[in-house]
Each structure stands twice: as structure tokens, then as C-alpha cells.
Amino acid sequence: MYRLYEFSSSGNCYKLRLAMAQLGVPFERVEKDITRGETRSDDFLAINPNGRIPVLVTPDGRTLPESNAALCYLARDSQLMPTDAFEQAQVLQWMFFEQYNHEPNIATSRYWLHVLGEPEKYADGLKEKQQKGHEALAVMERHLQAVPFFVGGRYSIADIALYAYTHVADQGGLLATELSGNQGVVGASKSTAGLCWYAGLKARSSGWVLHGKAAGVTPCREGITDSDGGSGA
Amino acid sequence: MYRLYEFSSSGNCYKLRLAMAQLGVPFERVEKDITRGETRSDDFLAINPNGRIPVLVTPDGRTLPESNAALCYLARDSQLMPTDAFEQAQVLQWMFFEQYNHEPNIATSRYWLHVLGEPEKYADGLKEKQQKGHEALAVMERHLQAVPFFVGGRYSIADIALYAYTHVADQGGLLATELSGNQGVVGASKSTAGLCWYAGLKARSSGWVLHGKAAGVTPCREGITDSDGGSGA
Image (tube, rainbow over all chains, first blue to last red; front, top):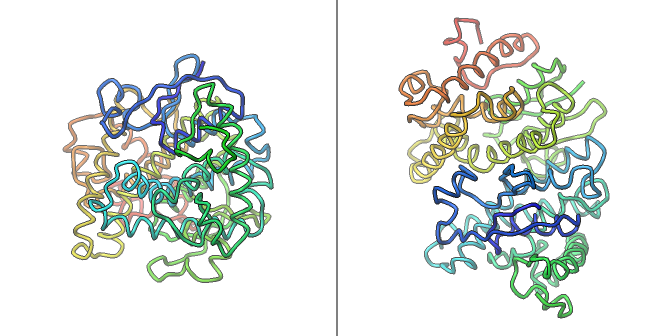
């Protein structure tokens, strides 16, 4: 069985829980609290010298850090990865965009505000992160004007990677006209393209989050299922 | 023929010039000066809505932003990409590490110091970037204690991706015991593991840079060939 070293509220870890649930891949979870430095212990550094979660461990014991690399490994030869070589490269293009332009800004804003709950301590950095986060959301919005999913007209791990922190962007204080996981923000959007993508992803992920509950798969967003018709979290 | 929209001194663009030279893929270059905002024009945003170089354009006119996604596309089914699925995921692991932990710190330090030449303007941010850059180099150094290349015991695009900004790290003021592109720094390293990798990559890249000169392939490091036996730059 696969093992996932993770921090439950991390969007990067949520990506892997969601993909494994949708692919029907059983896995066990080992929680590591990053706010207590549990990924910087000698034991954990032996698993990932970069001291970060998630780390995916294969059934035969090989370790794979980096959420998007693990997504690609899990999704190979599946319906979550296109078969065309150029479309596979486009999946990677959006995943690298996610890790360079999206996650460092949106996830970090959310970490400061929502996970650590220290808005005053990080006030200076927060403004820049939120601005760059908005820019990343705007790039997504622009792309989605013409297509229903990020690559090849079909749902793929590129969508999963970008949904992970988009659906909790409001917890990082990103309240704007760009697409966002907050219902109120969505309602205020000037565009419907991002909303359609977001609503579709929300529908796709919600059922699996519910399903995943019994299998130990939980959402990284407290209360998300409240707006999903009370399906329970 | 492939076309590469690039900024010559960018390490991200250097990755693609080096890989295409080593793979024998002919290409033409279109220079975009990022210091003059040439990637934020309407014309360029139509090519890449994220407003960044490099962008690879295939012979049939499809565009692919993100250096590491383009590396994967070019290297598919070649000697620069492992054939094993888990090793392919490990290549991605190190590429995502490069874009998350390495490039944002080392390339940005170098951009402020070397490309823009404004150390005083960026003094505050520089200290943090250099510290995180050192941490990234230390993760690489630790990994290389046990292996000659980053993945599978063989040279791959993971090495190319990590070499690109490592070999100009000294231009970002990263002078430490970790592996680095600066000859003096290399000589001061406490470890030989990183040095062996660095020396090997330097030897592999130098010949191709020389070869590439006639084909329009230039190094992103001025004077790098001075220390390569005067092979010319």
C-alpha cells in the first residue's frame, strides 16, 4: 500500500489524497505537523532531505517528494494524464506555473493568515504575496476563457494541482474578481469562465472527499462540505 | 524548426539551448529583453499570458512556456530522460525542487546583483534569498554524497535543470562551502561530491556551448569559457 507523509491542511497534500481517491489507489497517512517542525527532524530528513511534505512512499518502499512529481507518477497511464506527448508537456507547464507563480503566493498567504493565524506579524510580506497571487489567478482566468479545463479539453492532474490552493485562496485573504474558492467571491466575479471551471472541480472533488472520509481522505478546507449540500467533512 | 523566445543571460533559457544542442535539435532564437519589459507587451502576452521567457515554439507552431516542461518535451524518448517510470518521476522531483527552492532564490539574487546591478536597492531581500539559496545548494550537496548524477546514475535533464543556475550562483553572491560555479568557491568546498558533479557538468556543457556558438547557442555566463581552456565564448 502507498503511504503519504502529509500535513492535512496542506493543499499540496490534498492534491495527492484527491488523486489517489479518484484513481482508486489505497493509501495510508502519516501526519507530520509542519508548524511544530516535525518535517525537520533527523528521521524525516532521512525520508526527504528537503524537509518538506508531502512525501509519497510506494508499496515497495521508494520515496518521492514534491507533490506534482508524485501526481505525475500516480497518474501515469491513467485517465488523469493525457496520452499525447505535447499535452503531457502542457500538464507539466501548468504544474510548474502552479509551483512557481501560484503556490508560493497563495499558499504562503493562507499559511500566514489561516494556519498560523498571524496577520500582523506578516503584514509586510502579505501584501506582495497577495498581489502576486491575484496575478496568478488572473493568468488562470485568462486561459479558462477559451477552454473548460487546463489541458486538452479534459480533466487532468493539471486541474487538480491548480484547484488545490485555489479552493482555499480566500483563506489567504485573496478576495478579488478572479476565480476563488469563496462562494461570495465567486458570486462577485466579472467572468464566468473561471467560475465554470471552479464549480466543475468543486463538484468533482466533493464526492471524492466524502468517499475518502472512510478511507482516511479528508479535505484540507474546514467546512468546505457545508456548501456542498451538507455531505459531511 | 523550433524557435526559442529567450533572454540570453537567463539560466532557464540556457537549459533549453544546452539540451537542444546536446540532442542535435536545430532551433532559432528570438531575444526578448526582460529588463525592458519586452515579455509584457501585448504581442508577447499572446504567446505566453504569464509574460515570461523561455517559450519554446514547435516546428508546427505550438507554444510551450516553462523551461522544465519544455525540457521534458524535448528530452522525451531520448538519452536525457530515464526510461523507468519512477526515475522519470524523480527527474520531475528535482525539477520541481529547482523551480521552488533553487531558482527563486539563486536566480533572483543573481538578477538583482548581476543583471540589474543594484545590490543596494535589493539589500534587504537579498540576504534572505541568499540564505535560502545556500539551503538549496546544501540539499543538492547532500544528495550527491551518494550518487554521481541526480537520477538513476546517469546524466539527465534533472542535471541540466540544476546546473543552469548553479553554475552562475556566484554571480548572485552565493559564496559558501556548497557547490558553486565559482572556481574559487569550488576550491574551498569541504566536500568533493558536489565538486565532482559540477566538474562533470561543466565538462559536458562546455563543448556544447562552443559547438553551439556557430548555431547561435551562447552561454549565459560571460567568460565561462575562460576557465575551460580558452575555447572561446
